[in-house]
Amino acid sequence: MDKRSSYGTMSFGGNGYMKNNNGYMNYLLLAVGLAAVVGAGYFGYRWYVVSREQSAQVMFAECLREYEKGARERQTWADIQALWAAGYARHTQSSLAPYFKAFEANSALKQDKKAEAVALLDAALSLVAASSPLYTVYATKRALINIDLGNETGLQELEKLAYDKNNVQRDVALYYLGLYQWSKNNIEDAKEAWETLTALPDSPEQTTLWTALAEQKLQQIA
Image (tube, rainbow, N blue to C red; front, top):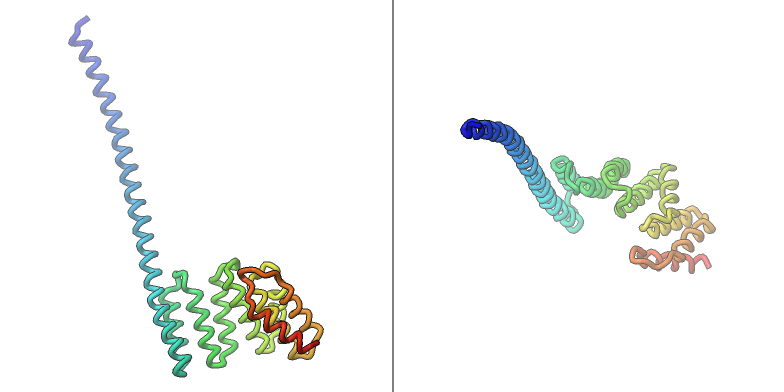
């Protein structure tokens, strides 16, 4: 056998292998390139999110300063409400978006715009996870405002919040439910709400203030 021919055949086979190997290398380089693009996109997005949240925090702090200043100096609450509204409009994708709305609702309430405050709390609640403790805080506030407006939904929602065993803020709802029933001279209903409150097991979430207030009210009934 001609060794040159044999080596030539082996050489030819080697060239074919190298051609295939180059093809695999091209695919590998393409995959690495795509991974780099995806990775850059991910870290770029993370940077955008962090930057967005930082910007929202800066504006939220500015709004909060004005809100506290308004409470001290009795500034125009309409201007402060507009500031919260602008903060929300600028940071609708931020995790702070519902809190901009909640403070906007508070600012509306300072102006006795109760119906508007309810609508703003509706918007805030639509942005907060139902599992968040703040959800029931805002829901309780909305229920109380609705009661002030004479809306039947307010009392229904307050009762639901007060007797929901999964509501870690139910002490607040129970106290105000009792207070509402007391104001309507429904003494037994008021007593039931306050006794339920004072019987709640002690826990880190349990606010002793509301328990103490309920105990004072029960002493008046006795």
